[in-house]
Amino acid sequence: MTIAEKILARHAGKEHVRPNDLINARVDLVLGNDVTAPVAIKEFERIGVETVFDRDRIALVPDHFTPNKDIQSATQARIMREFARKHNITYYFEVGRMGIEHALLPEEGLVLPGEVIIGADSHTCTYGALGAFATGVGSTDMAAAMALGETWFKVPATIKVEFKGRLRPWVSGKDLILYLIGKIGVDGALYRSLEFTGEIIADLSMDSRLSMCNMAIEAGAKCGIIAPDEVTFEYVKKRAKREYEPVYADEDAEYEKVYTFNGSDIEPQVAFPHLPENTRGISEVGDIKIDQVVIGSCTNGRLEDLRTAASILKGKKVHRDVRLIIIPGTQEITRQALREGLLDIFLEADAVVSTPTCGPCLGGHMGILAEGERALSTTNRNFVGRMGHPRSEVYLSNPAVAAASAVAGKISSPEEVL
Image (cartoon, rainbow, N blue to C red; front, side, top):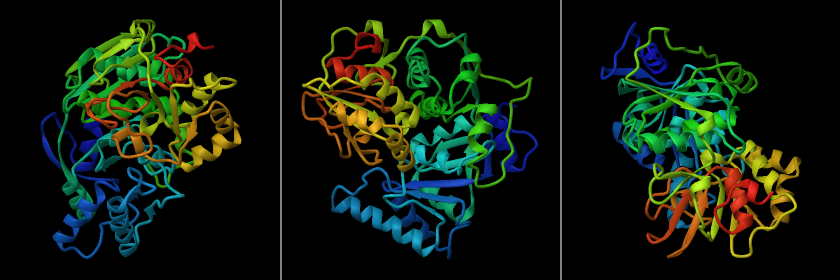
C-alpha cells in the first residue's frame, strides 16, 4: 500500500484497503474556521448530541475575516467562540493568540505524522507535509466528525511525483507545485493522493514542504503527502501534543501514475490569470506591470518566506506605483520576524505589515483589488474575482519573485533587483 492507503487502513481498523474502497475511519483532529465552522455548528446542534466526541481533538481558528471586518463576520466569529466555550474546546485560538490555520496547527504540534486530519477548508491538505493524511471536507461532514470522531472516505489512488537533482537559485516548494500543476492541470490529480519524493524533496525545509502540500488541492488532489524523515522529526519533536506513529509506503506499493521531474528544468514559476495551471517560468513572463503585491497566506506566510522577502527588500524601496502587503502566518512568526529585524526591513521598504489573517487571499479584506488592477501574490488561487473585482487580475509566485517585483514595479526575478 501507499502512505495514504496505509494510514486510512489503520484508522479504519483494516489490514488492507484499495483505491475506491468506501470506509469509515476515525480522525485525529477536526478543524474549522470562522467561515466554515458556524455552518458545522448549526448542523451539529441539529444532530442532538450533548457534546463533542473529544474536546482535545477539535481546533477552531478564526482567521478568514479576522480581525472582524464587519457585523456579519463578527457574528460568525461569535458563533464559533460561544460554541468553543460551551463545549470547553481546548484548541480555540482567539485573535491575538491565533494565526492562519494551516500555518498555526503545525506550529502548535496539533497535526502529526501518520494521522488523519480533516478540516472544513480545502487547504487542510497542507499537513501532508508532515506525513499525515489530511484533507478538506464540507461543513456537514465536519459536524458529524465533531459528534462521532470519525468520517467516511473513498480511498484515493496515489500518484507518485519524483523531483530529482538540485534546486536552481530562488526556487522553492511553491515553484515545484506550480510547475507540477502547470504540467498536469488543475484536475490532473482529481481525488488522488499526490506522494512527493526524490532528492529535492528530501532537501526541502519544512516550511517549503508545507507550502508545496498546501497547493495539492490546486491540482484537484485529495491530499499531498511527503514521507516523514529527519526534517519532519526535528520539526515535530519540540511541538507534538500527543504520541504519533509515522507511516511509510510499502516497497511494492501500487501507484496509478509516476511523474519524474529534474530540478535543473525548474526556474521560479509565475501562474497567470485565471488558473494556477497557467504557469510560466520567470524568464518567459515578459513586461507585466503590477499594482499590488501580497506576501503571506497559508501558502507562503511562514518565517522562511519572510526571511527570503527581507533578503531582497533590505535597503530598497517598494516601487512608487505598488502597494506591498506582508502578512505573517502566525503571532509567533510575527514575534520572530520582529526579533530578527525583518519587520523593520519591510517598514523601511514602505511595505505594510498585517496581523495574521487570510484577508486578501479570498477577497475578504486587507487588500481588495479594484477594477482593472493587477496583483502578484504568494497565495494559492488566482480565479476570476478571487482577490476583488471580477475584472482584476491575480498572478501567483514565490516570495522571492514577489519581493523583487514589488521593488521593480513589474513581475521580475530577484536577479533583476539585487
